[in-house]
Image 1 (cartoon, helix red, strand yellow):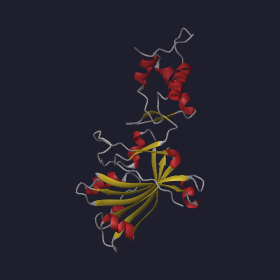
Image 2 (cartoon, helix red, strand yellow):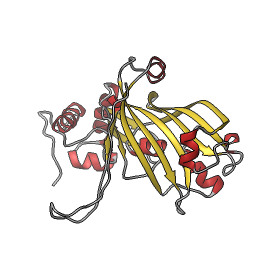
Image 3 (tube, one colour):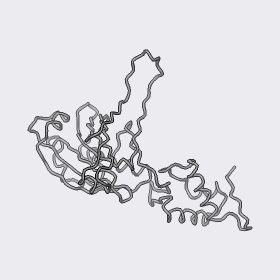
Image 4 (cartoon, helix red, strand yellow):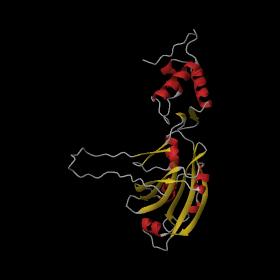
Amino acid sequence: MPNKVFSNSALGPTGDEVRRLLLDRIAAGTLQPGQKLGAERDLSLEFSVSRSSLRQALASLEADGTVRRIPGRGGGTFVSGGKIVRDLSKIVGVPALLRDQGFTAGTRVLSSSVVVADGSTSKALKIPADGFVCDITRIRLADGSPISLENARFSAERFPGLLELPLGGSLYELLKSEYDVEPVEAEERIEVVFATDDEGLILGVLAGSPLLSITRTSFDVNGVPLEHSHDLFRADRTRITVRTKGAVTSASTTSHGNVVEFRTRT
């Protein structure tokens, strides 16, 4: 049975009544931040309203920032105001991560160059100490606002010509399309740090604001490292989740799972 919205008007439910019902669902948690609403046809049937009334309700909610409407294939209407969920159980590029949660993804490339790998990078990528890497620094945007500052490094020998390619999208998708390589496993370390003056300026937060620092090494299907990166995510706009599968064991049984390590940088 559809959820009927009753009105005192003989003309049936109004856009304002639909708007209030959607607001009530968001307040109650039935509709979560980042959740995609159904198609207009399905919503109009659910609420027993005309599409014109439904569109009035959605336009009003969009105007006050409660929902975001993204056009095009894969778009739709999404509940606003939520944090970006970063699921460590999945390896996915930031653009796809944002799109799946209803955000419009954007990128600003700050720098790209070939440099000599430092000690931690050469060790992580298993290249000689004097080996060269492609160093790419970018700002990631969600709905036009900065959410992360990322620095990614790749072996210059393994990925020749990488810096000559478009660097504004997903580097993982670029590696797949141009080099037929993709990450299938990653090791990530998370630390809670505080923004420096420069980091705060770039990310649009005050110096000293908490950030989530994620150091990652990703590996291809053969277990060969292909990326070593360091990302700084705004803690006020990011939520970290981890999903672990495993059988229930007794307290005396030793088991291994995902470990997320939080540290504080001073």
